Length: 399
Image (cartoon, rainbow, N blue to C red; front, side, top):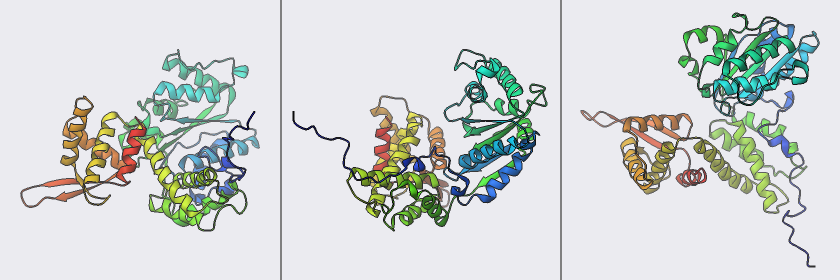
């Protein structure tokens, strides 16, 4: 019988421990670069919990990839260990509000993580209970198992109903918890998120607020070096980490993006049977990361937002240069034709303006208001941040 083809590739090994380059990986404290002040702030806010007292509620703001979730997870884990020395039990639940976007889902997730059914004899089914019953079971679990519960609500602005913030922040005051106490860490990419909250929630929740600024090129370089042992020794060429850091710093200081690019570069070297990771691998990885990131963002966008983006990309391709401006009216006209192509009803111009503003917030486009001249008023210019070809590929990938 003839030998079959080996689909698992060559014996050249690039990675030693690829897990170090996964977004989900929680590094040791000495691998968290450039966030000493932020870690200190968070520690001071929840420090009372380590002595069994009520911690401060916290809202953490900052763009994607600035270490908000990483620092929150790390400092709560450290709080658990410190509290043990004081004979205090702390429970931590991490809720991704992008995935658990309803109040019921978020409460169910927190209860499930904090529960040990063998110890509490309380079940937390994935569905089938009312929201109020999920709350009742959560309070019983916390009261029976912990002195303090810390609940991290990541991307809290994605929660459809803010009532969960009121319920959690006033659980002790309202008598829902009698033996324990609770603290909330809300994480948001929207710096103005607090402005949208009910005044009662603001007064009970927003005890401490911290803003995480983007990383600079030096910090990103140190972050990547701290994870370079993900690769075998001598595999990374000297210019690779500086090149990745420069690309990420130029594009909003996103450490998560930098780590993704470095991982993609290693994968490209592996797929190409290279013995080392080169700067060319980085450039190819950057293109792959752009498409991957955009595909993820666009896949979560409504269908009409995708059509507006496609219109923007097609118009940009028709103009000279990848950074050519597109007016809102130009984008709207082509968007309506794309709706006709897809046999769907188009939205009104005002709603498309809102969509363009949302795309700017997601850092997919940039907007600049222009003056048309005396008696002609103002108009908005929209520019794609990424290559229009990459945008179109991401739109197609997300369908």
